[in-house]
Image (tube, rainbow, N blue to C red):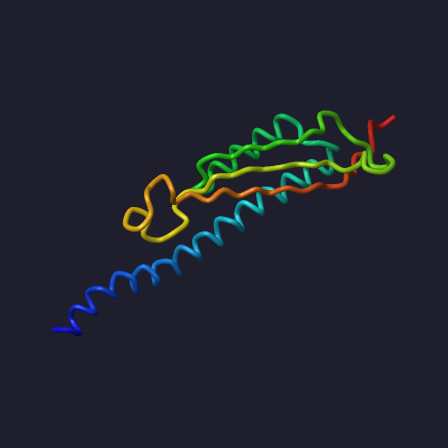
Length: 136
């Protein structure tokens, strides 16, 4: 009887640990998809010299299409193309992407409240402009 009581106390925790391994794999695939979208957008911004409004909107839409992403905010201070051969810091395009991702841990309704099973992810970086300017 003692072993049965111990089993009933430990079994849910063991099952949650096993489920968390699956959630970790899911989270890794989600992060890879997000990084792929951001990398593609960085390369487009590198060639055009800045993150245009249409590019930022398409990034937001693609990020929101990833499973589990609830909110996506994109910020970039550069509003006009920067040329490749600018001096110093003027050729770097800075950006910041803030994401809120839901359902990151197993046992979301069991151990953690629904509103607390959220992860905030921030991707910040810069990319050097390769924009050559207008053709003559």
